[in-house]
Image 1: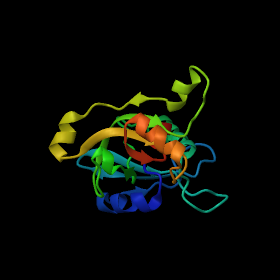
Image 2: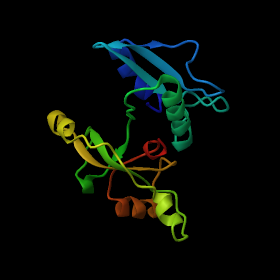
Image 3: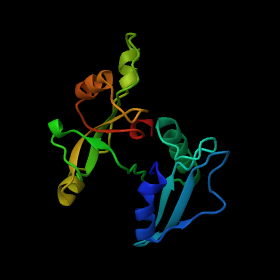
Image 4: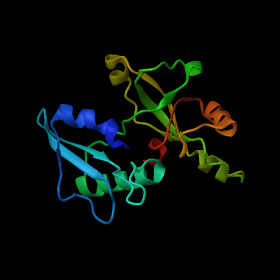
Length: 175
């Protein structure tokens, strides 16, 4: 699953995938699915599609959650990978062009200052451990923190730091 069409296009072209028409997804969801055989495996690259009301890519946790649900329900994949662009933090060892594999997913903009709900708001979920892949490919590993805004006001920056975030993006924790 990749949120934006421009992010997905190079991978779709490289793998020679073809857009599924009609869509394999049920209901009025704008998500799109490109499929094909790669090395003997069926591969699907799905995007959240365009917002019908605004004509832009559907980004953020809600479209990502809906698309991921449809992927799991309709395509029944063996594994679901969320890929895309994100912002990294130099203070956490990040640099432009680094590729990260998540160790955990957290939210940085779900502030619910009520005991119990505060922890729920952050919503820490561990990622599948893949140390061998991280090492073999030379990727970095770290916490991915999700928010529904592209910017990061001071209150979000405080939470990102408290989360130990290496990467800030807009979909992963919703999936």
